[in-house]
Each structure stands twice: as structure tokens, then as C-alpha cells.
Length: 150
Image 1 (cartoon, one colour):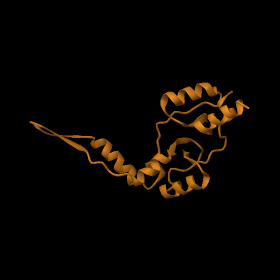
Image 2: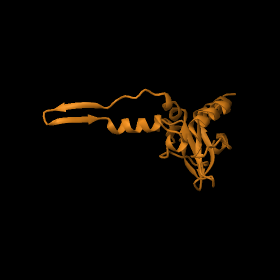
Image 3: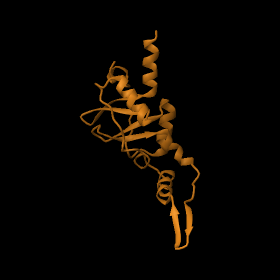
Image 4: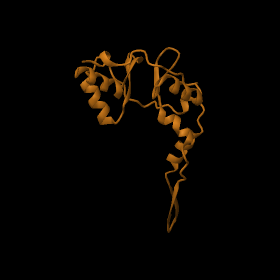
């Protein structure tokens, strides 16, 4: 079986300019946990998932300071800055992940499942020539396993 046989072929997509609260409402209304972010030509720019949205309610953890005889060193400043950016984000472009793994529609489901498990990702855009053609999620794979067992 191939990815194109079980993927969601017309996933809900969002633009990078969409506001985060609109995205949250869309996720609730459409019962989705993520969405591909595309430009006006349909080119995949990244993905947004519930994790990015719930950052809006995250507690801020201040960086740690380490005192050494020659002075103070801060630990975790970069992570702190990244968290603040996500917590204060207004647009999808500010919470989307652009460094993503994509799948080919002609990849076997077994290879896709292996890759997803090894990388710890469960929401994968399927592309052809940099254009989004579908989404493969862990739910799609579970659904295909259930169908095979009937």
C-alpha cells in the first residue's frame, strides 16, 4: 500500500497571515490537530499544530544563571527567547514549523510509518514538486491497519 492510498487528499490549509486565535477556532471547528501552511500558489511553507497554539497559555520559565568565580553565565537564554516569541505570537507564521519532513505520495506506508516513528513525528505533509497533495497522520495509518484486519 502507498501513502497516496491512505493520505488525506484535501487537507485544511492555512495562510501564514492567519491570526493564531482564528487558527485555534478552525482546529476546533474542523476537528484537526494541525494544518499545512501554504502560500497563494499552494507551495508548502510549513505546518502548524496544536502544540504551537497552546504555547499561548504556557508559563514562562526564566533562564538559569550559573555563578562561576569569573562571573555569571546564563543558561537557556535562547530557549527563553524562542518561548517568548511563541507565547506572544499573533500570526501563524510566528508559530509554524518550517523545518519539516515531507513524504512522497509513492512512498510505501510501511516506509512512511517507520520514518514517522523514528523521527517522532505524526503529521506529515505529502508533496509533489513542492506542492501539497495531502497529509499523512498517525490516524490515517491506524485507520488503514484497522481496514486490513477486517
